[in-house]
Length: 415
Image 1 (spheres, rainbow, N blue to C red):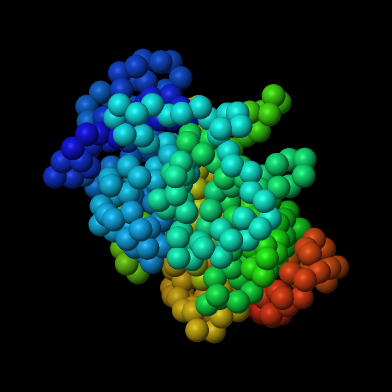
Image 2: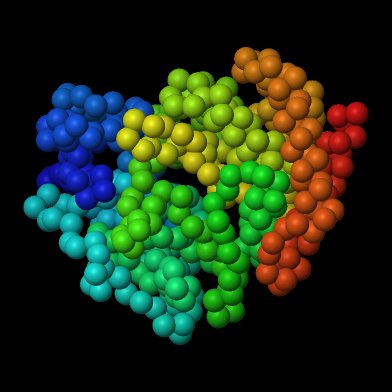
């Protein structure tokens, strides 16, 4: 089987092959370019090939998960377990700076009119209707898009002037991710928009999001943190990997109770790999506290990422903040245990103290962050500081009530 050429920002970096297990080899030209950086923490720059688990953990982490992955595979006529075949068909626009192209096929132009397809409102509405049955528009001519996660979503280009949407074609980079609300989770788009706006009001570094109705479907439009818009209007991919990829853990094991990363693993990763570990540990801690305060049990390791800018490695902005307790049918089990706490509903300051001791973090620091963020969230709720479309604010009222109740509980437990 021919290999897939791995490009980083349209520069050839290596080859992904498939033998008994996946094999990745850096190109000598990339290694000696003077601007080379590793594809992953698990794949340091070297001439010898990598094989097996660490290769699969990174490349499988670029693909959709669960039912979305199965549906894409069915449309493309490949096995859902065949990472290589899926990346061959949809690996043109992935997370970070990565794109994959079949050997002998060079990436087409990534700029100009042929690099995008502007969508009229009626066409956009039809695409949103199709997405649950055709995730990522799999199999459509000229479209090779891949995003991790189980939720149906679509990379798009947003016009900075009029806000209209376009599909990236060929090797073009997208600027945003469009997430239509799934029918089984009514209110999800408004819920996430509310939590993201609340995080911003509380002073956290979060991606910019917008709630938008497309036809009759509520959607969330999120600006990509792994893209930079240059002064000349060109778009640059910024490399990234999520914590599971950086720890060599495949996406199907993202939950701690299934063998996935723990909070201690995440703290150790930041300590060893971040260019500014003190700041990034604080940012990670803030994200964890915010998830507890807002009733988000799904803060697993794939929902935290690292951004690479040359040799500089930092935590990305926070994303995918959702009050999962708004749906009583969803499990309240924590994706990563906090101290002895296994359920989100039982987390107390005592559990944060247990976590801080095991992680080698000073309890006074952790307690100060817990108190400060609780106060900021309470203040944002009290002052109505959440900037959101009125319709989204109305739909997200249940999430607001849950957050208000949880912050009040945490305040009582801290006194």
